[in-house]
Structure formats: structure tokens, C-alpha cells
Length: 216
Image 1 (cartoon, rainbow, N blue to C red):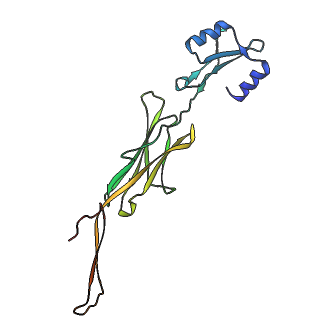
Image 2: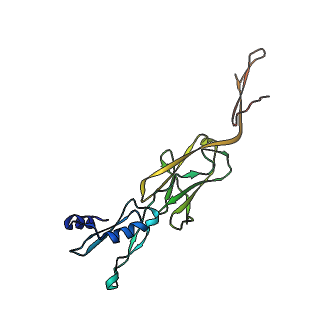
Image 3: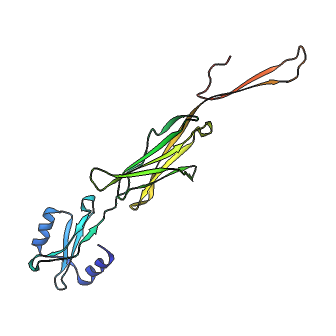
């Protein structure tokens, strides 16, 4: 019921119309109620706690006069379910091998929009697809973020944010990256110039994930 309808209801003292009509409607739709003002010939259909099943086209009929009103479409908005990132909450990758991060969101009406973020920065280059779910009204969204990992991405967090008109603030899921990479070995000597009998220290420094357990 919009603001105009609410104004008319207050102005004309809208009340339940003939009990037979009201009861016949409630018998089929318990959350529905017909309100009317007989003197002004105004009738309203009130729906309590709107649900997805109420998403439909409505019309008012004056059966005795064989008259029908223009049709009105009721659209019920539904917020998205929690987004799910494939492989989360931690994804193991290999450095240098491209990977597609995938986020899925279901149960939204209209379809949810998905954005990817890392450290508060929106990620570019994503692609999304939408489709209807089995009920023919709610929609799913799948978003893909192409990613080429390096050892600098170890511990990096990426978040998938989904929102639609029913939930502008959105919902978010986060995944942490663990990147395996080949060892990087550095050998150094101190001092670099020595004389016979001097003490020399060789240092072998290795950066690797997973960590190196044996040295030779």
C-alpha cells in the first residue's frame, strides 16, 4: 500500500468490507485482507508480510457490472544469500600459474551485483553471469576474477561483495591466499677477501613456500 492509499484509508475511514468477501479472500490467502469505503466506492487489497509467492499481476473486478481495472504488478524484492567463494576460506595456489577465483550468490531478486576487493581496492577485469533459479523468480550470479599469483600474494585476502536493491549494504565473504613457489637461494660469504688462517662464514638464505626442511 503506497502513501496515497494510506492517506485515503485515513481520510475515508477504510474498514473491512462485507465479511463474506473478506472471509472468502482469507480462506484462500490468509495474509490478505480487503478494505473498503462503501460510500466512496474505494477498495484496497492489503497484503501482510509480503512473500515471493505474492509477486504477481493483480486486478480489481466489479463482477456484477462485468468491469475490470487496469492491471498492477507487485514486485517483491529479496536480498541475496551469503556469497560463497569456491575453495574458501583458504585457497592454495602455485606461483606463476593463472587461476580463476569464483564467487557464487543465490536467492536474490533482482539478481545481485558482485564486486571483488583487496585491501579496500576494487579489483578490475571481472566477468559475471546471471540466471534464474528453479522457482523462476529468484536469480543466481556467478562472478569470476582472473588472477596470476606470485609469492608476494601469500596471506593476501580477497573479498566478494554482493548487493541488490533489497540490500544496498550488501553481504561479504573473504578468502585468504596461500601461494606455493619454488625456492629462491642466495649464498653469501663474509669476509669476501680472506688470508690463510682467517675465519670465513658462508650464509645460505632460502625463501620458499612450503618452508625448506633440509640443507646440504
